[in-house]
Amino acid sequence: MRKRKNVSCAACRLQRKNCSQECILAPNFSPDDPEKFTIVQQVYGTSHIVKLLQGLEAKQREDAVKSLVCEASARMKEPSVAHELQKQIAELESQLEAKQEEFMKMIILYSSSTLDLLMFNMYMAMLKQKIPFMSSLILCCCGSQ
Ligand SMILES: [Zn+2]
Image 1 (cartoon, rainbow, N blue to C red):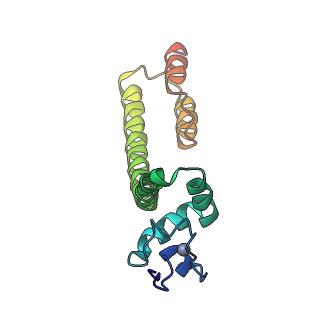
Image 2: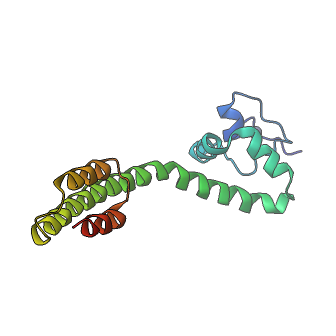
């Protein structure tokens, strides 16, 4: 009789549970690689993983776990990517704002001197609130001459 070594799988070890012969997580979460379970557990939660594996045939479980690990590690990396993109968007927005301001100044310079300065100031105020009325306002300004 082959006696199973009294070693809990990574999942049971993390939850401080006794790992049984029937443990559904044991075949895919070896105690040698605890990181693998930690990642998927943080993203999906143990009960969700167990439920998912219970709904699959034994031969499908390995692939399912592989894709869970892959997805979970991608999700863990995402926050830094999202943060980087947000930084870029903020940077581009401020560049756009500066260009729009420049553009409006050009319009004032090259258009008739009767252009209402009040209108320009109103536009600038709206720009700061990020209300995209640019084209309608240009029409309005040009029409008011
Ligand atoms: Zn286990």
